[in-house]
Amino acid sequence: MEVSVAVISDVICPWCYIGKRRLEKAIAALGDKHDVQVRWHPFQLNPQMPKEGISRKEYRSRKFGSWERSMELDAKVVAVGEAEGIQFAFDKIGRTPNTVDAHRLICLADQHGCQDAVVEALFRAYFTEGRDIGKREALIDVGSETGLDRQAAESMLDSDEGLDVISNAREMSNQYGVDGVPFFIINQKLTLAGAQNSEVFVEVFQNAR
Image 1 (cartoon, rainbow, N blue to C red):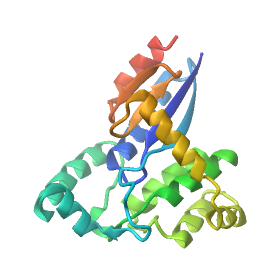
Image 2: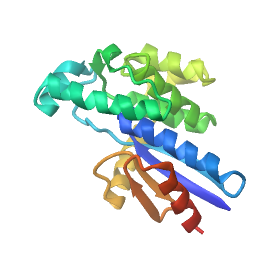
Image 3: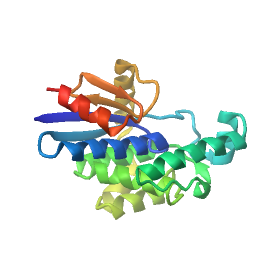
Image 4: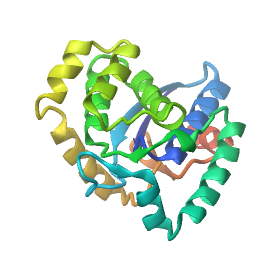
């Protein structure tokens, strides 16, 4: 049975990375029973973020009231991530980036058949390697490391290509009432909000028929 999964997410959301792992675990548990096709759609957690991004410490302190509170929340995410095989390294992250260009790169990767690989690489680059995925060169490097044509990535980032995808995704989010990510749409009708456990995904997939 074929199952389509539209994932609405942002690449600077740690729970989106965790949700990806749990989704993958669910797909693996299904074996050959279902042909699950996953497609990633953009969501901007910080649509007003300056192009160059801002200091993560400044951003998180402002968002959560203090840097101490931010570190408490990070520690909880680190623990959950370890259980899912993700080594979050928040101490390596210097800036919270604007993610428009990262989403455009994901769109380009979809056209070249390597979308999931690029999404994975962006999550890893930001959360475990501490790379600034708001920067053009970092994005080009991430794309080329996953098999995306370097020249195609450069040309896209030097143009306005992909901006319409972001605006269209905003309409999709409004249609499904998305106010947080990750958000999963199965077969265009069943929805799941948040980084659900893999067992929940399996149950929804089985009901999708």
